[in-house]
Image (cartoon, rainbow, N blue to C red; front, side, top):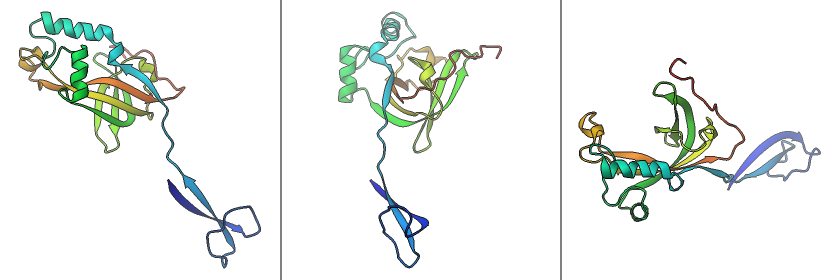
Length: 189
């Protein structure tokens, strides 16, 4: 809790304020107690509820050479994998910041957003869940895990990507009635 003192510059006879300052100025000072407001969060995305994505990554991992994720320490999205996230075998972190910008990637048809943390770092993510809830300036809390492409992954062999990379598994946004556009400009926009 923070106390802020404001010199109102008012004559002593005006208002009912707690007097904190000097009487010789014949002014009143107001003491304001400022308490940080708790953010009301709305869950916008949770991998637990994204059965289609989990199934497609599992299918690629198990049956498509060159695609999917390393199944160690456990197959992505299974109860064993979630236990590995919880006990730290799959590294995870929570980043808090604001929705810094919204954009449409690829050919103007892929909804993306940027998270800017309090220390100024920015990362870009695909908008998941109700992507219209991503509104610039809203507070955001993202849970991110480190996952590894399979050793024969095209991402690694063909494109030279780092096999270890971040994956967003949960996103909470500040509650708001504001919404962003529902469709992108498309490849011609």
